[in-house]
Image (tube, rainbow, N blue to C red; front, side, top):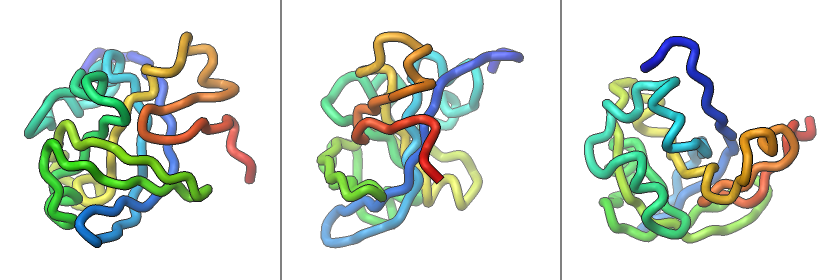
Length: 140
């Protein structure tokens, strides 16, 4: 991880559904190419890679404990429902282990870079591959 790196990200709350199991979770939209500059996620990958987020439509990486909790494996198709009611089908392309229970049980990562033409657009509207368009800043 390089000191002083910058990478865009967006966070939304949602529910994932797999095999009749629903779990509330945080969904982080990230730029897989920039994320290694600001986090240890690349070293925490247990299956797949960050670049796997580009390999499938609506690809998603799960914390390993979250995946275990719902019974999902790499290749599984899960349903994501965001707090605003949007429903998206996503394919699990990787799993990570941060070693912190709240992260491993409650986080998912998807690619924000796929639908964004430039980082400057993050300030107004960002679309993540596994989430609907997100307006920034959020309404409070």
